[in-house]
Image 1 (cartoon, chains in turn blue, cyan):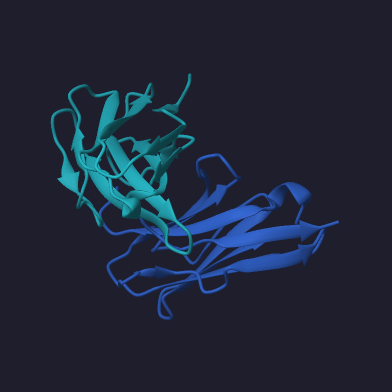
Image 2 (cartoon, helix red, strand yellow; image 1 turned 90 degrees about the vertical axis):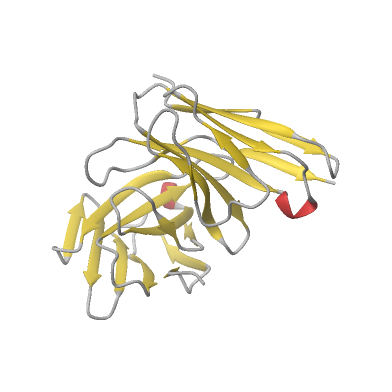
Length: 111
Length: 113
């Protein structure tokens, strides 16, 4: 059973607007969360992460929010740009190295 | 710095054939991983290694074997390929000591007929 779930397979957003990607998890032992971005025919690349001791982490246009009580995290991209069109994977870890991944959300940024 | 490289990029096998996928990293990372990516399933961990000479099973290890004879290389073997092993395979590596981001290779697209 998947412990990390991304329930929205796709998201379409207009250029310049905010993209919000959601991720839910079931394993309360997860203590570190990451977002990866993947372009077609390439491997995933690390985007941003957050430790369970924080509720927000920001890096430029990307902000990740963590709600531990709800076992929910979200990734905000502001403003969205055409180069942000990709598949985004949410991942979680409980042991400092192995990751459990969600199924991914495909983001399309419209001009 | 090439990062993580994978060989081959594409392969077509017939059911029952065997093959080995090679992963190499030049970042001196301790940990290495093999994942498979299937539509709607995300990335699932097949096997991983926490150091040279060590390997361990991940979430979906059946039908695969691995070896880590050198720190920089991690090999994934399919002894008798099955159509259910048609997938995109990604290798990744990460440093030791706390949570570190994993660096991924470009992937190998394998089709088993």
